[in-house]
Length: 207
Image 1 (cartoon, helix red, strand yellow):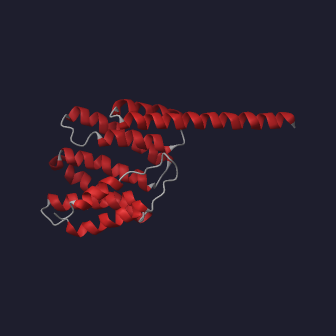
Image 2: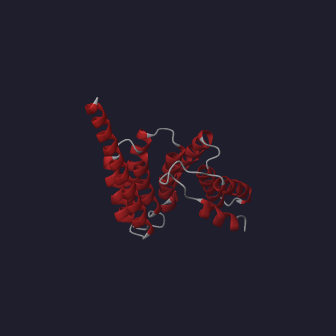
Image 3: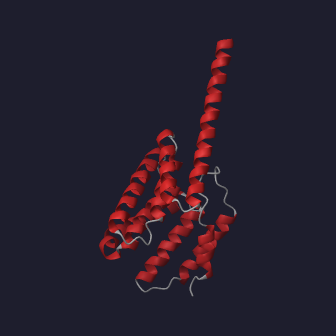
């Protein structure tokens, strides 16, 4: 009986230490990202992902870091490296957590970064995929604020590209903000971004 208790205690201690290392690693990665050290943050998330084999979150953030810095990037070689890494991480995250609306939004963002870089080259093939992804995400999680806001952003961008009116989508941004106000992430590290961007978008919506 003592051996059983000792084994249970050792396993519990080991799990607690691993969780503590995960927490510290994630906190450090977010700190680096906040300081603008995107390469270091991406590398830190990758190191965590190599240990947390059943956790989609580190892969998600590798993808997000590399996608965010790709918007506005003019160097195609650099952009390609970043977005290929992002796509690889999204693929792993999807394998770990299929039909996850947060990961679907991230996938749509990867495609959107390509379209933003060169709409004539990538718009024809990727724009329909983005629209389809947001439709699926909205079906899976109609009250997820990032799903609602990101879809509204995409719809507004598409309308602008074709010379249409973005005003009809302002109500979707308003709804996203309401959802953000009541949203509670599952943990300190689950996605919780977007409210500031939504508020800034609404402020200029339709102007």
